[in-house]
Length: 239
Image: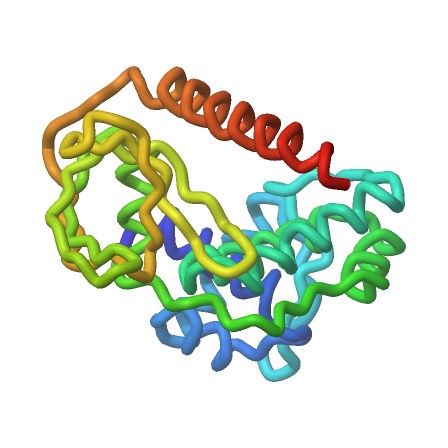
């Protein structure tokens, strides 16, 4: 591991672990010995980090030079908390963990009063309906969307029929009762939504469809919006 990466991990541990953090705890978190922790603490201090504490007492990150202070309006702060907690509730394990880390980093950047408000926000999120677990690696699927690479997977529809699909992944949509991949399906030559819990054996292919993802997704979302508007128009007469 490079020293730069090790220092980055140490700073993240100082931000996320309850303070004061002992050298032993930091060593376990970063996978090095305590002597290395002492040297790296001194190095971070030389780089401008304000770290309180000493060997035998534990350390506290007071000021992180890599993260200048931010300021938010109260409603903006509540919106950020609500959004991140929603991701922790509905996201796949990797995304939920990332939301928790983002919350920690955000708290480290805020002035003391706002950091306190973030930690003890009045808003919370709870979902009582269980969302089916995805049948594929969602992190790999998100990466394929971003890199605009085709994917192949086995799919079982609502009637239990199984097919193999090759698609151009556009986006992952998080709905109340299931999560879906929005994609252009090569088998159907059209846009389709695939429930993640009905997908299996995901394979990310070398074939690229760059740079068509954004315009394709725009077209798909416009079609979905038009469908919703038609549905609403059809509902009005009966109301």
